[in-house]
Image: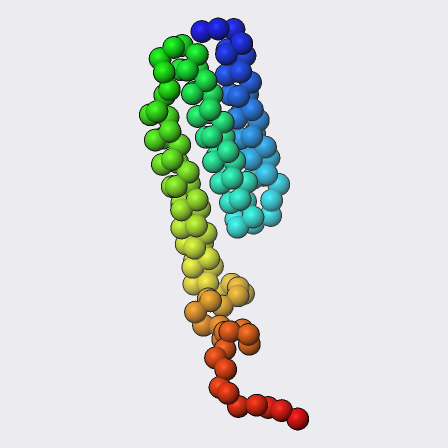
Amino acid sequence: MAPPAEIVVAALLLASGLVVLLAAVGLLRLADFFQRMHAPALASSLASWIVTLATIVHFGSRGEGLALHTWLIIIVLSITAPVTTVVLSRAALFRRRQAGDALPPPLSSRPPPPSSRPHTGASSGG
């Protein structure tokens, strides 16, 4: 592998590690579960993309052509990471509601906002 490609791959892998380290700091500093979910969820997606780019540069510089299997991996990760985050947040919200914590009511039990209520045609005029 050519030295410039090795430098690019090393820089990308270090950047990925830095993103994950920043996510760990965010995980420690944020107050509750719902705030703490954002840092690792976003960082895992970004770090995965950076590692994928490093993999593509590595295999591309070796003359083996494009590493298409890495695209499959990143597509699966990009779909499953946000879905997992949403499922975890909904489960935590459900558990806190079951425990009796003061939380906003579920969206299905709220009345619709005034702008989305159907118009009856009657004028309240004046």
